[in-house]
Length: 316
Image (tube, rainbow, N blue to C red):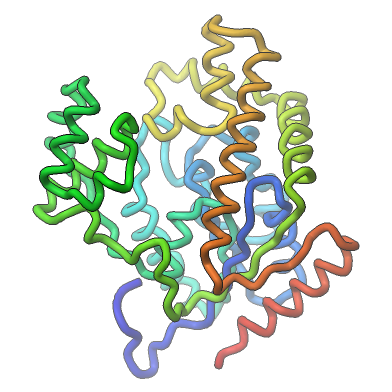
């Protein structure tokens, strides 16, 4: 993440445990860290970075975090915009610190672009607040897309004209950085050598769909609605990113009287299942991921995963 390794400073091997939401990857990563010496977990989750968003993002418990060190959880307030560029910088600092202390890093998470930034050392564009403010003031998303098509036709061709978030971000970077948004990072089909080995945890689609619904029921019983109330009581609006978090957007609408709790939860379940489908498609494109079927005996898959991660963490 900071350029080629110099002699004598080669970064220790790093392993990423990946999978779609509700696949059980976090529990398996915790089992790996418990059974292998000197392992610390580095979270790759764009929502677990936010303080106060615990239940709905399925963060590891305080007891689990006390038992096994977890990094890049609770590093931003929910009213902050936490960007890919900031995550990449924070992760680089964590990995450098772990290497200095002789600890071994296991990445765990499902935010695909964050993971890709670490696996492939993406050239991540920064933020340009003045440009962003100008673009946010223009309500005509399709006109903005037409402007993007003039400045960066490749980027424009990759997104729907009505997808405001993506269009505005691409324009922000293209104008602010003075180079096309499409010039950053490898394409989705480029999968070269990487210092990060990836192992994936997968379950059949119907099992994931059922687990997503079950998890929402558990989260509601664990205080998800009360957590949303606490966020709304902060007196500061959530950032665009935090406000779009799965489950939170729907429960915020419910607490503001826009819909019943049952309707909000049903919409959250549907949106989360759609998200899992997109994650699955993203991971399927990467031939470097070594997959483990998590539907077999839990002890068997844990043993197999621990053994494989242990092997991958050994210096080559």
